[in-house]
Length: 76
Image (cartoon, rainbow, N blue to C red; front, side):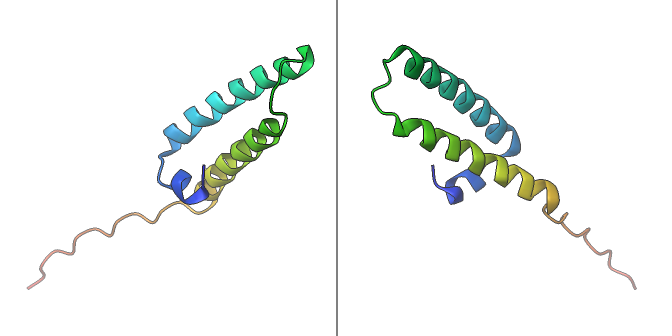
């Protein structure tokens, strides 16, 4: 998934996707051990996707979105 697509997701959605990808990675590693993995390049691709998602979460942690300014009251 592309970084700009991942940035559209909320933090909770990203955490859920990270967990899903980690489970998928675990399954692929198991397949590799028993010799049933058809595409070994998939392992690296999933690792990179997880790293992208974690990076986006970290960026949001470091630079949170600025809060919307409070509406100014009409002073007379």
